[in-house]
Length: 198
Picture (cartoon, one colour):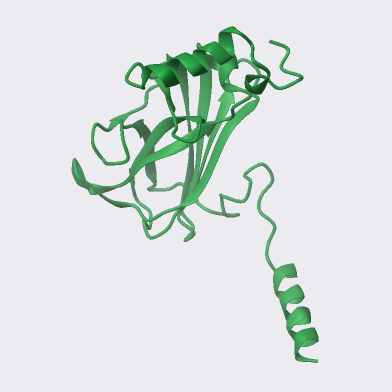
């Protein structure tokens, strides 16, 4: 009997949740405001706060080979005017020429005071993984990285940057650079979806 009551209560509770606004994948709260919120995306070379610089449209970036065989962009955040406890963050990479999603990252992590400016909060480098069967289509090529950011307390914002992927990070191991480049130049099946049309 108690299991039935628990199931009924759970069903009623879930049914009472408001649906997220269309198109935001649930990151942005209905009625949230960007007033006073400032967030920027940038790049760093590793998982620390080191070497941060904000992205500007047209920046050249490189894909970094990951240890499990994937490839990613390093992305850091800086901002102010929000609660840093555990904001909801979604980063999406789209191929610029047709808008196809080629990578996505959803996280909830505490942001800490930024070392270069303690009046701002920062998020150390995160890996925006680019899909294995899509990265060849942007090597080289342009992507649009979108940010949807909400602190869960009524403050949110969005941001986009158009970036140019030049290729695989020149600082990566030669074996990793060669394997990924070969996958693209020789059009190996694991690096292209069946309907790639490339």
